[in-house]
Length: 293
Image 1: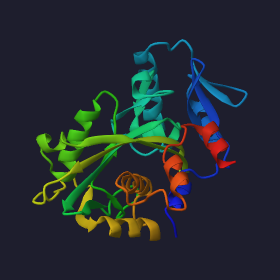
Image 2: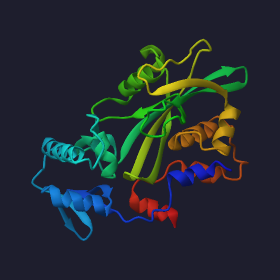
Image 3: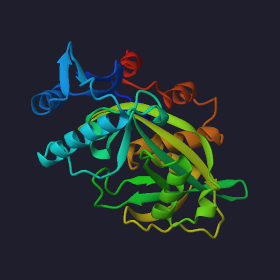
Image 4: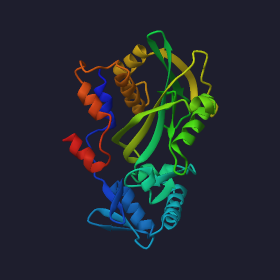
């Protein structure tokens, strides 16, 4: 087994065909042909030319586009094409969250191949020179990766809320952490990857944070998403990542990044450069195709 296999699992060779989704000449996402054909047949705002799906250019404003996409998302959910909506807005953007041209429900974002953003927090405790990580186990009723191991706090990043505000919210809900403690979390960079799931193409970005916790702190889940928390030595966590698939897929990347930054995976490791470079893939399908060559 290895660490690098998790990089490959999150950035597989893209063998499926996807059609670009463009708004005002900019690629916003990637659609499977079957899903695109359903959109073209049932929603008049979409048109197709040379395997590129575009949205009616008369929908120029942020609000107009968002309202049109909200109707599309509801129609898709009502028809059972996508799961029930979550009523959580995600940005439709060619770049960062601040470049969003519209919003769409979180559930629909994955089917449209839109860039999605999340936040993951490594909670760790020091005992002399030893570091242990708080690890969560996802509830068995979770739709995605039920029962899998997870970072102490991890969640999506909706549109219209600041990074610090969302992190505080997630820390409270997932780990019972006070605002004052959550605000001690230190941003340590962002990871990116391009993978294909049953819902479609996923160009995702994860904002990562570290927080050194007092020994007396014990996380307590309040939203039912975490079954239990485990405090494990970093070497044990790395062994699990290296030798198994117990962690939710993208959490492996967050832990590998933590291990690199804290010196547990050093330049002498055979895959060091591949790991460092692989944790931050250029976002988008064309980039994924180039990386896979």
